[in-house]
Length: 297
Image (cartoon, rainbow, N blue to C red; front, side):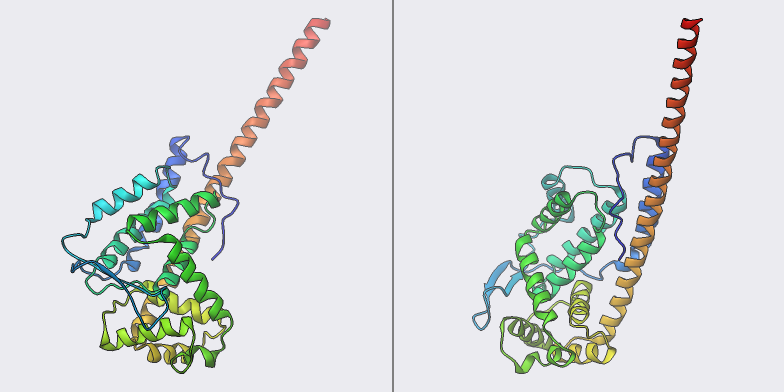
């Protein structure tokens, strides 16, 4: 996804024209985000956290409950309280939509946090926020977002990095042979496969699909046959993964287009302001020269 690193939002909102451009870009992006909605339902059960004794302590299983689950409004309010600075609409529109949908996943009865899900979310978030004016703010927003869901942002980043490092060292063959191998990441994948196979709670999501795609991408194993084998090893429906990856790719394309539209507008307005400024300076120079000439005369 192309970065828009030169984009500055400092001028946005200064004039009615700026505001219209910002809102227009955000609406354009939001209209194309509908396909990224997650088909989830609010099914609440008891909250609890347990760590699998057969695996590393990093594999944490979270369970939800009706009595303790916050409302969507509360989750959004927690996010806004944790991060009080304004977020440009082209980013905020999609960010708020993702937060609502992830809230529904987070408090679904069968939800279990896992590292592949974390990798998928981190990948989506980093793509969404690519080109954000401030790296510090981008990280602060990430922290506020995950904490609003009552989860650990550091755990998300740690698990995502762990899987990325592991995937870079894999090949097309070794990636799908995790069931016969030992290791921390292999244990995580085995746990997912076991739960997805019906021996525990597992809630498939598009973030999980993106996480799988990221593993394949980093291992340079993006052939359809490798994805098919990996899905089979994890007891995941490949048809669902294919569908959700198509939606993800489409979202990324729309994100790029929306950011490019906004960048073009901001660059155009910046150029106009510079031209007006140069014209004003020229007029002032002419007036000054005329004034000096009159004084000499």
